[in-house]
Length: 224
Image (cartoon, one colour):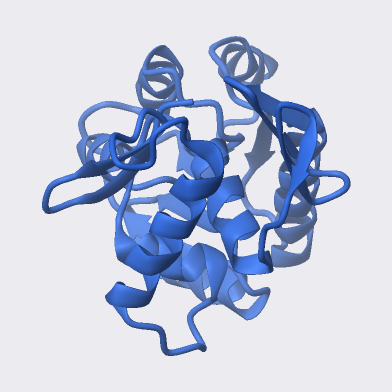
């Protein structure tokens, strides 16, 4: 389930965006200013950001610039009532992927969100390599030293989530959403068990993890 961060200080607009995206199957989170956006993106992974330009305090241009400086690569779609070409050019030059002017139709925004997520997926490497490991997303295969490794569907989803958010801590709750979805009841213990299984397949020494490390009290982080 793709996670979308909505940065919008108008409660009515934020609620409409959140509810509309939720109906499309997205996990939408709302924050009201730039500081909250920074906190949200540093503590939790998102697949796309909808960013209003006119925010209290720091405007959306500053927020977009900071997200890119922090090395975050998820698509950013800026939302604004400003229609001047110079504003659109500025947004795109500082790292936004798209620029939507208000008022906009929910249908148009949904289409732009889908297109941005589709482009991001297309830009992802077909095969991701680290150490002696190859993760083939096209074939949904795991290989070690060129030899195929048996991997379950859940294990592959977990590994794909870690690679997609490499360098960031993922909580057990986030991993549950990534691998099983929100409609399935799975215990934290089950997540830990699957992590152990993944380590056995990717780590030179599973007892001393190099790639899939535990972060006490927070979750796990992939460092491949």
